[in-house]
Amino acid sequence: MTVVGNHTREPDLRAALAAVEESLVEATRSDVPFISGTARHLARPGGRRLRPLLVLLAARFGDPDAPGVVPAAVVVELTHLATRYHDDVRHEAKPSVAVLIGDFFFARASRLLAGLGPRAVRLQADAFKCLVSGQILETTGPRDGHDPVAHHLRTLAARTGALTAVSGRLGALTSGATEETADALAVYGERLGVARHLAAELRSPVHGAPTLPVLLSGDPAAPATTEARDEVLRQCAAARAALTPLPPGPARTALAELCDAVAEDT
Image 1 (cartoon, rainbow, N blue to C red):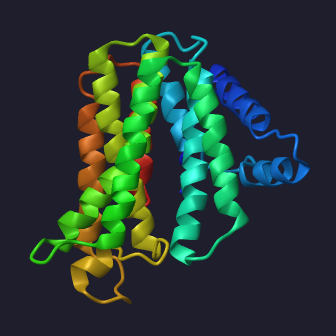
Image 2: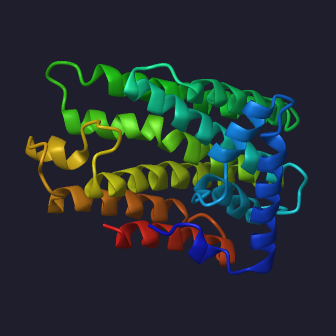
């Protein structure tokens, strides 16, 4: 699924994403050569960089050149990378250097975050709390008598949606956008994050965890169902609806196109 590439046509947005990449290189530098080399390999360009893109697009509803915007984009990407490698270790149930590099990413993200002020720190802390809660919900599974599909969606909203939600909110905060704008972008980010994850589940298992098609059919070999695809589209529609309070313009159009890209991928 192409998420970032189709939405970087404007030179200033490409320049901002390039600044994020440069800052990621700086953030993964260490006096210990092994740490520096491994961290840079794990953070190498080529990923979709959805979360930094959300920060940068959200910042266009305020001042996109504000000094905290690029650091905020780097913070969310470092946090994403850290949780991704921690998650791999958790599912493999074995120690790995990846968990240590994940800790290194968290440390660098925290240092950058401190420069964005106490509110940004609180927002990121709340998002991380949701993320960890989601991981716990996934591990423990639904309680007896509870709908496993509803549990799965709740898990994804916390585990996956929290970081995309805070990406939109931090972009608004660091650019000086309004509270209403920040709220709308947070809802948009959460729904988009869930939709993308569900779209990935339609194609293949994710970390060996139960996927929506499996939960709906009870068959581990079940292909994607119409009902599963409809849920992706429902999440995309909810993300699009969250954009309604935002003023029209290139940023809102790009955010809507991200929803379209996910919907088309189903």
